[in-house]
Amino acid sequence: MLVELTVNGEWKSADCPPETTLLKFLREHLMLTGAKLGCDVGDCGTCTVIVDGESYNSCLMLAARAAGRDVTTIEGLADSQGVHPIQEAFEELGSLQCGFCGPGMIMSAKNLLDKNPTASRHEIKDALSGNLCRCTGYTKIIEAIEGAGRVMSSDKYPQSNTF
Amino acid sequence: MRPFEYIAPSSAEEAVALLVENGETARLLAGGTDLVVDLKHNAGNTNLLIDVSGIPQFRGIEETSKGVRLGSMTTFSEIMASSLFQEKMPAVIDGAHTVGAVQTRNLGTIGGNFVTCVPSADSAPSIMVLDATVIVTGLAGSREMPVADFFVGPRKTALKPGELLESIFIPKASLGKPSAFLKHGLRKGQALALVNGAAALWLDKDGKILEPRLALGAVAPVPLRAVKTEAFLAGKSVTDDVINEAAELAVSESRPIDDFRASANYRRQIIKVFTQRVLKESIRIARES
Image 1 (cartoon, chains in turn orange, green):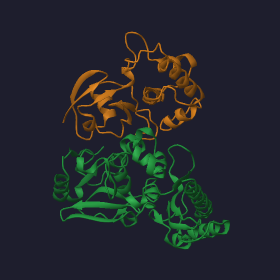
Image 2 (tube, each protein chain N blue to C red; image 1 turned 180 degrees about the vertical axis):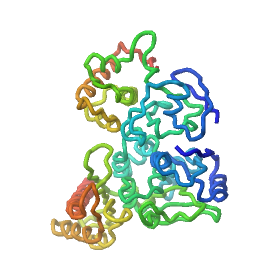
Image 3 (spheres, chains in turn green, purple; image 1 turned 90 degrees about the horizontal axis):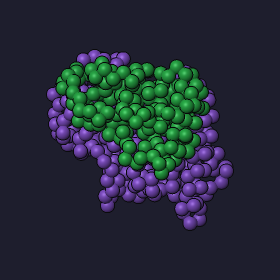
Image 4 (cartoon, rainbow over the protein chains, first blue to last red; image 1 turned 45 degrees about the vertical axis):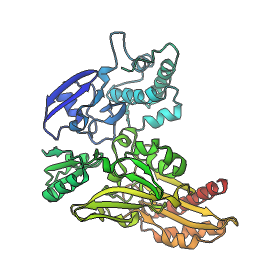
């Protein structure tokens, strides 16, 4: 079946079998390998992408479901001006070790901070409960998201900058 | 994943026709958080997915003069964002909040959770204590039944071949009823319930318990309405002895199993403690309202 959708601001289309998940579609048909295949059952969250402003496990969503919609992946966060404040904070604090959970962590953080940039530590933990990290113990990830939230909620942060 | 065809009908009638025509080789796709996993590991003879998630008749939350109609394809995130649920059925929000994580709640639907029909379904107890019914639809038209009757056994509902779960109905009399939900899992996030439960009750002007309801999950083959405990509580004044006796009764009504998550004996202890807590919390809310 032909699936047409917007990915990171660009209109894309590809032919795929109906049983193709959005994750497989992104990775193997559009060659966007940022979102990772982890558990493949919706537990680990490293496949997290944002569709029409909400986060989803792309391993559980059929590509057909995303047709005509607006998908943002980790590749869509950096632009010519630089990396996203969440990416910057993760880098500054050394929030990742092996990094495999990173794309999903950052997309879940973006989904939270876009809606609630002043999220409390409790709200951050709740929002990340679908993203597993086996290296870090989460502390620096949570600190980075708090820091990014401060940047994104400041007057200087461009409000129109929704990526 | 096993190859299959995918079709997204635009009406309930069309979905029913496809279901009848294709029999057991067709499966209904709601959020897919259970079904897609199932298809990856155990496809069986599925050749067709009928995506009913976008059918308008199955979607949305609507308040009428008789109560609230909750479309089966409403996601957990949509329930949590609903001001109607926040104001009048906060225990349902607490239940929805413990389902999976953000990404799964954005996909997963209350109807899908009901049809998957596992004993630990976190959406069930807080809906059951509101005397909710389900409306199912098929070739012969629609029929309505109490939620407790919809759950027949583990992964087995009262749906007949060719029938779909259309909506859940919460009667007006239950809106604003003091209610609480609790869940005990091995972790706070993304854990299946070892025991979950909800209570709802009114207190009359003398402090006597009116229309008590208690539902428990993961304690029996299906989410359970503890009707003997409810009957015991009705008309009683609130004392520690009454609460403790109710908790013992709830344990005796339950049929927990041993599995790798917890022993039946451990679950019995939790049922007792949780029944006490969920009743006390409902009573606290009733006194404040």
